[in-house]
Image 1 (cartoon, rainbow, N blue to C red):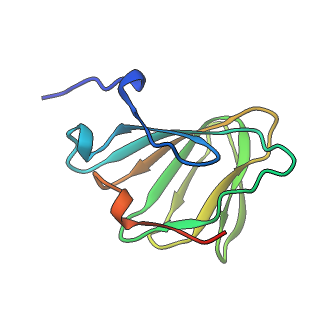
Image 2 (cartoon, rainbow, N blue to C red; image 1 turned 60 degrees about the vertical axis):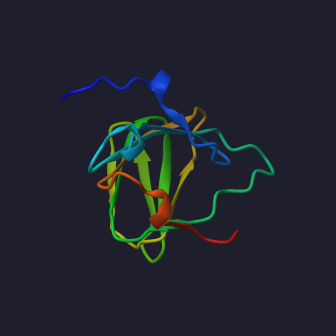
Amino acid sequence: MARVLTQADAKNMGLPGRKSLEIVSGEKGSQAVTLRLVEIPVAKPGDKPRPMHFHKGFEECIHVMSGEGYTETEGGGKHPLKAGDTILIPSGEKHATRNTGGEPLVLLCFFPVPDISQRTEEQKA
């Protein structure tokens, strides 16, 4: 049965350096998708950027809602992003998205699995 899942009911992931709300996941009853709303703030002097990470066995699709920045991929360089752009990151490719603008970078991040936590690996800073 269809359900409406609101942002107010999203799980705050408590991840460092950004706001990450998990709106849809297996925890919310999904059998095949995770959806996160991510907000990366404007970088301040001295901020340490998030290290690259990768996902084992599934892709990540990032859609930019507002702001501008880039996704850096290992071996692929920096991919500039602005509102309306979407980037598809293959399984296993190390990557990190950064804000380069003067306002928060707001993203919708889609994953074709109901739980990404067990198969996402953060690199050491």
